[in-house]
Image (tube, rainbow, N blue to C red; front, side, top):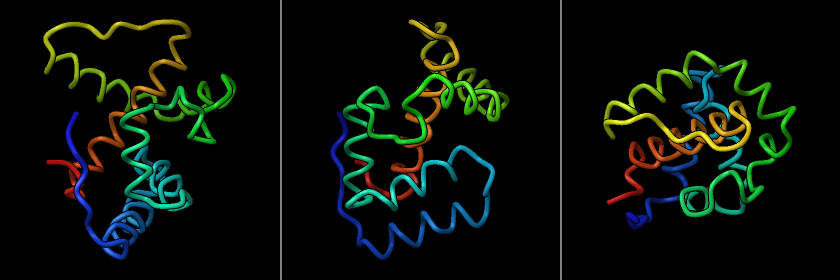
Length: 123
């Protein structure tokens, strides 16, 4: 697992606010408020990357009704993320349980990882 660096809270909050303003309907814009509402945004990324959505830490993705709605709304983006990851790993993703739930969590976690990279939180 990659280690998290510690940029300033101001830098992190500004970056996350920029996401919400520049792409308000994106998966990234669903992640930014979750991180901003967490007790510490950098800790949010550490926790989501270590424990995932299955931990229940993402309030908007706890129930199937919510994960299905998220999947349906972001279907094209989720499939794009899925295609990129499958191409990178050279094999299809292993889907366990409910398809929409699994892929909603996967896309949220993968996008959170990408945001953490963009903010310079990861080595």
